[in-house]
Every structure is written in structure tokens, then in C-alpha cells.
Length: 171
Image (cartoon, rainbow, N blue to C red; front, side, top):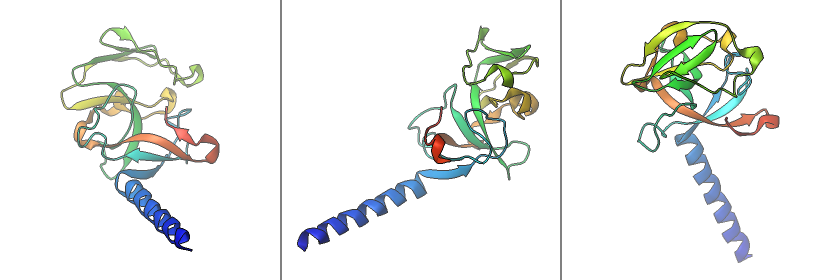
């Protein structure tokens, strides 16, 4: 009977530790809209790491899926992919994205989600990031409202937990 007590204690302690990690380090977020398809679809649920960037555990990198307060209305949050880092020059010609004069390979943007848009070269100011949605013909992003201030970014999407058919790391 004593073994059951240890087992129950260990189980309860494990559940408490897991809840603390989920509640304080990770935050569940619902994806709304189609701008990140096919990586993330409308109504999917993801966990974001709220502290990865805040404490310098990791830096924002090209390709990260970040969640941030929309610069045009800070009561709304968006999720987009980082394309340009501070100091980079980003340009779009007939839907092809170049960073610092080099074409960006974007296997996460299927041909049917590309558009033929153009955007003059823009230098990403210090303390900001240039972000784009993967569904380019359906995304409101830095092409429309400019780069995102670093302080507006509050998380990195790391794990899809719903629907169960897409359970796994975010790519």
C-alpha cells in the first residue's frame, strides 16, 4: 500500500509541474484566418513559447512563426513568419521574395498560395522584423503596414495541439 502512496504523490507532483510549465511558459493560441496556410489553418490551436525571446533564451530568426500585437490595433494579435531581420533589405518582385539581394527559398509557400505582387526594397529598421503570411494572396502583413517592433512580439509558435491529426511541432 505504501508504493501506491509514492506513486500517487509522484503523479500529482508531475501534473502540477506540467501545469506550471504550460500555464507560465507556454500559452495556447487559436489561429484565426487563412494567412498562414498550409502551415497553420483557420481554427487550429497552437502553443506559443512566451519567454523564448523575452529572456534571451533564443533570438528571433528568419523562418520563425511569431505571435505579436498588430501594430495597427494592439488589441489584436497576429501570427506570421519572420522574413527580414533588423538591417536586412527585403524586396518582392512578381511574388519572389529577396533578402539582401538573395532569393529566399520558401518551401512552406505552395505555388497556389503565391501571388504576383511587387514591393520596392525596404531596409528593416533596427528593433523591428519584417513578417509575411505563408498564404501570400490572402495575408495582411509587413507588405501592407511595415515591420513589427520587437517589443510587440510576445511569442514563438512551437506546437500544434488541435486538431489531433496535426499534432506536432510547428514548421
